[in-house]
Length: 168
Image 1: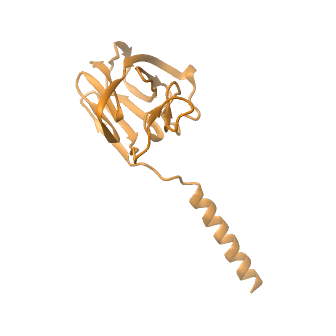
Image 2: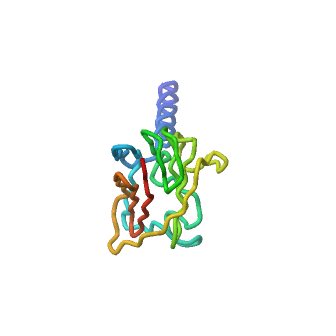
């Protein structure tokens, strides 16, 4: 009897530990264009303030590197050599990171596409950085999204947006 209770106790602890290791995930979305594909975790606004200054209640702080999505770092795939924000980029997979700003965003392609969030982000692995203006949206967008056009990569979430010129 004593062994049964002990086994039940250990099972409950193991189950609790296993469940706590899997944080809730946002849906994984793939946006596939002719020359570019973006795979990202899609968070929702859910009434939260998304972007703001250090010390604010915002989810993402201005001036801090962000994975530009939820869960794993966003992965951008260039199907052939081209230009991203006017800078040359080789075909391949990259981690897409950004530094949100009130007036401009820094958009980063990093050579390590497979990583969880931006916790292990290393600036020395950056392939390129570009700066683009922040586009303020009049109406908030509930779910983070990307649009891939032949000539631009467009990011939208909450009341912020940015566009990066593409050329192939």
